[in-house]
Picture (cartoon, rainbow, N blue to C red):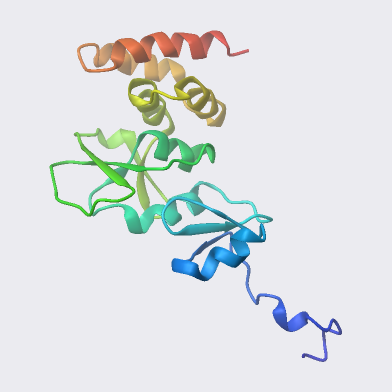
Length: 187
């Protein structure tokens, strides 16, 4: 026990607190059970009393993203907004590639350079590209996710223009309808 700290349990205090701690196996079961950490995607846990941001969430997923992969859909929405946490990590790859099955679900697509940004060392679709992805591909909670993305800064007008560019692609008619619903609810 250090003389500078008179508390008898001072030796239990962590030396350095970080919002995201990657824990594997049973090491987090006790703290999770006690409510000290919450489970994130993959092997990440976050301290419940420390705020986490987009870079922290993206770092949590970095080990799950195959080389050249970009986080998309609900997973990208989670990185940008923090809620709701996805059960599966959706990743777009430029070409088909074998990967380990598990929590990662891969899709093959070509993304525009201006639709991708790097957050916390991981490639993630931008807010507006994620908005369009969510409206095109997510069944459950698409409007709720879209509203959270708009609140975080996604541009619904730019997403509407992209819908027009992609008018013959899958999911764009649905995205256009849902986008109108999202925009009608804006103040």
